Length: 86
Image (cartoon, rainbow, N blue to C red; front, top):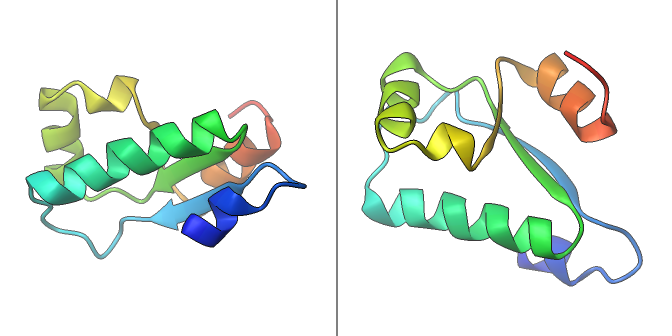
């Protein structure tokens, strides 16, 4: 991720699947929020998709779904990266 963020010529755009992430601890949540912020600061976009229901419930409970770019699946995430409507 650091190399993507250091790429000065092009804003970074990354689609990240959370499908195999049944659990995340506070350091993982911190990494997601910090990485999302760094992408935004670099003029790029990080879109998370295929979030398992239990993890999505946790993100909603912490109101992080308002701060992160979430998509239902990879296709929706790619549309979000391209700036297309859902």
